[in-house]
Length: 246
Image 1 (tube, rainbow, N blue to C red):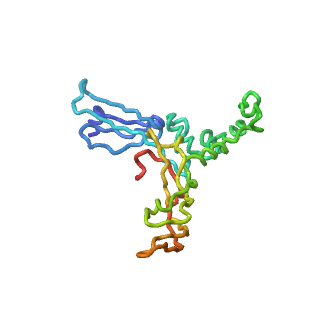
Image 2 (image 1 turned 90 degrees about the horizontal axis):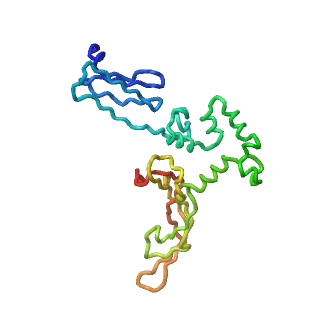
Image 3 (image 1 turned 60 degrees about the horizontal axis):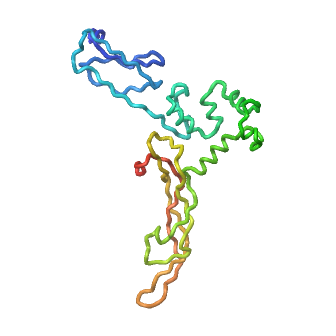
């Protein structure tokens, strides 16, 4: 077997450190999934014949998108190792400018951050030159403002009768304020053609209202105070359109 793998094989190498992920020949079993640490692999095909015998070798590959969470860095890979699209996703996931610069320049992020806010005349933006800002623009505030108007819970007035599907009953107040997901997903982190804002955490909250129902057999209304349960969205998320139920 060793002799055969020396003259007729396919080899997959990790270019970032030169390690060999594996070497296989056509008669062996299909290898398991291999994950590159640097988003690159080098495939070396060696055959001791001028025309290799069929069936040959077939390699399937796919891009592994980093999973973003609040408790870890948005990307485990260095910025230089990411393609532009993935780097854009990684950059977008940071909540503060400090964390972003620390990711981009881990060895000198504090110096780079100071350079960004140093008021050098040649590097001043129009917001500074024309007096709209008294200092370098607060990028953290700009990001937070955009987040507040993106996919987040916000106040909506809803019809109690429509929410409860009770056409036989009148409620007062007829409309109540609830939290529902709203806003757009312009900076969606998913690699899909279109994202939509959907609730990721839903709770039922009770509201006391006046309930009016027709009396049975006689004229008039039966009046009572009652608790109605309405759906409130506590957390929202941007997902690929069509995957809202996933």
